[in-house]
Image (cartoon, rainbow, N blue to C red):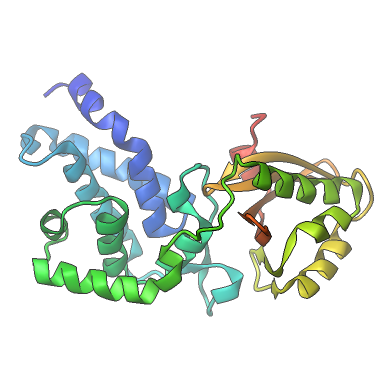
Length: 283
């Protein structure tokens, strides 16, 4: 097999593999490393592969095992509302896929790596149980058992809420515009009208999170500063409406909104200046 044939048969799977590695690891940076390692291993094994399975199955087996190795001995990633001691933070991810929503990514990190792999391969990627068993070296009974435990533990986080407002929908655009306008004009009146009573605010990194509109609003009010302090650009992050944020001309991070048909259910703010260049539509 030649290099062109390898690229032709594997190149189109890269985006999906990156999303899979991100779901497994909860980190954009680690997912990129895992994809690079996956393609390196695949390239080295291409001559021996001989298409004994589909290229998709083969690459996902390699990628899954790369991520399982990366997870050995490492604590889980989390958001402030469910963080425990010495845990790492979930990173946001630039993709419009609905199955990358932050609630799902956070929920996945509560599973054991093995349960996580089985659930993703079966329920997200729709591989047959027999193939999953071959990919992970498990019996069909073990795959079924791991899947049942993963589904039970993940619970509601595994399901997309029925009232989600798609990032391009009028409802989501109104809510994101209200959020950005509140900070640009230092006036939270419009944002107040868009927040649900059960809205949650999470600040990453750190352990601060606020539950309920009455607890979130004072934080927003204290942050808006003066008109013109904030500059924001609309983007889509983790399949959700989001804003790339500058404060007084300096990059600050990204805010990701959980928009529902009846209002904003959550805002997760990632304070990381490096995210601005990564997500900004103008770069």
